[in-house]
Length: 528
Image 1 (tube, rainbow, N blue to C red):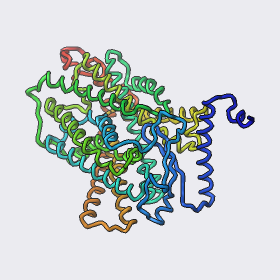
Image 2: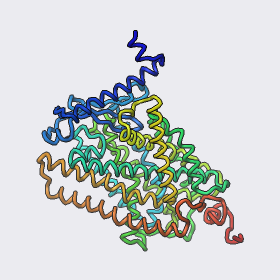
Image 3: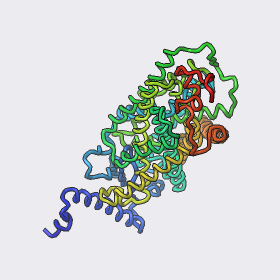
């Protein structure tokens, strides 16, 4: 009886659940301490952030041990590694390794029509019909190949849950930390991109309310904040489907408007853009790469699957859908607008009800995207800062979660206003952060795995891998330099970070002359 009183303390089932979560974390802590104090069993217990806010607890062979033995027949389904959810008392969270490849494909399809698709018509304008269409196929092929080598690495090291783990097993702990830091910077940058679009779409939906862009971004952040306090996300499939429907509806509205308005006789399109240079080509390529690259979370997808070896099947469904949608959006915008195609697809609409509805749908899509990605990043930070209270549902766990989500939101706000140009921020992310995590690390980890297992690479494999690594490095360097130069130019032309940036949002001839023309106003006849 006294034990019951001590454990319960009168708090009921909620207190028991909190205690169970706390005891789980402390058990992990004790096992970690034992291992660090000289446990020679070769086992380790780690925590990782899974998809949609899941906290995954993994007991596995340590990286040092497995590199010593190099046994390649391990599996999550054997006693060599065990994986479970951190929220042991939460019945709304599905257990890990339940997803089929079809389920994963549907989630990938819902995520692929994201922010990057809005820039594609401009990339067609910058590259022309042939290069843009050709390199969409090339970049998709690179995505498939890099995914293939990721699966091959996981077959040898099944306890991999993220890119950092792959680097740890194949290269070393220093590579794990490089990948870890790069992933955090990447996620913060993407969240800044999302928050920028949230503010921009809000301002566009209420274009007659003349607030400066930083204020709209701040309002968007305030609207997002309550949802970021959700520590797990249930019904994720339905949420992703609604998000996909919203962005698809927004894009369809623009396409219909373009078709209805017709193509102006002065519009010009080119098989290969006349003024294209190697630098501008790589800059445009980085924005297209942004739309395809998701390898930084593919290991997290695999961790959710019943059999990760089926992962490559997702491209049977997701591949044609993704490439098809991208080509349709890019080519339609380029056909009707030619070299004047905008880097923000909704700029093809004039002010009016269609513009408001398209902006509202885009707002919802970006809101869902921000909530999901913020949840994953906040979980990563929480595990790093306070690993033994990640699963604590009491006041301390909630307070720490508040601190993590608030920090992520503040950093996203800074990024969104420091680089207030959506197309340039997308290009910067696609050129600077995605190649290392989505191409360089997967290829290098695969090569190292082959070396460690003693399976020699054939000569043509060396050529292929060196070519991919060279391509990734060149795109990183060239596109980043070009984007930074354009960014500095735009700062001097449209305003520095945290400036008003009313262009193409306010319904005035000063801020949005082209959109006012679409709406029927003759801005040239109006005195400034």
